[in-house]
Image 1 (tube, rainbow, N blue to C red):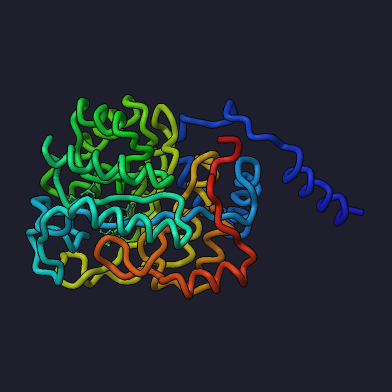
Image 2 (cartoon, rainbow, N blue to C red):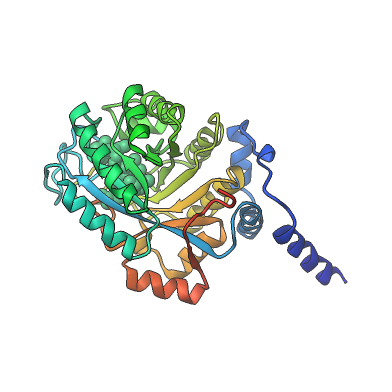
Length: 341
Ligand code: SAM
Ligand code: DTB
Ligand code: SF4
């Protein structure tokens, strides 16, 4: 009896519990999050998958395509980043891409099944002239029927409003780690400035995409604080990218040991439990993950990926491998990841 009761309960959870945003919490303490990390992995993953199904269709993953519209030569010194002008990496500085090149890549992304097109730039912040060029890209890409996302560095309040006016759907600006650890990996800007830009983006009515990187040598307490900082924002970011560090030759983090897979899955599950209505994106580092690890991440509530052979400058899992994996896992691509939106 107990077994069938359990199944019935499970069916109930999937079929009858409707998403209720009043349930969302914004008052997480770091200790409470740290306690979640101590739970057995199976309990975390099960809870995360159940909570995921209250807000999202099961077995669906949303696909975003990322391109670099301005590569390399960045004045910032982010220790993880191959595009910083402070380090000698294989990435050369380039000029901003022409609109017709961006449109060509956006059409290709749409034909390959992506529903969102994300444009990244290696800037500390865009100049107003740069911003106008990006706004023209946003308008063009929207006209193709794709959602748009940009990640251009720090913004002023008027710049966030200008991006909204051009039709930008999402802005990506990561907290990346805890406030304390942030100052050990970046000296050229502050955590406070990250929060300020996120607030301008939110205030302008653009969806917030904000997450972090795991495996930079941070402690579990830093990961717990990062998640608390994300979940305690006035509204949860609609999109939460969780990146596994890609250690790139020439950057200060090039020799960082590979991050523990189980801790990675736990972090995804906890992010989903804390921000159940948000889309957790399995982001950088997927290329080096096994099929089984990616499957565990989807079970833990990740429901979005970057597609294509390349991220901004680093390699990514290509379409052949991704299509094969999705077919074997019974996963379908999701055009609109948020239920009812
Ligand atoms: N320049 C803008 C900024 O820093 O906000 C936007 C582009 S920046 C490359 C976007 C994000 O990429 C960073 O916040 C970081 O999370 C991620 N990233 C960069 N290099 C990475 C690496 N080697 N491994 C994993 N994630 C990385
Ligand atoms: C995010 O959180 N991950 C993406 C996106 N936002 C811009 C970037 C990953 C970059 C990986 C290193 C590279 O390709 O240069
Ligand atoms: Fe520049 Fe962004 Fe890379 Fe930092 S993460 S060096 S701001 S491109």
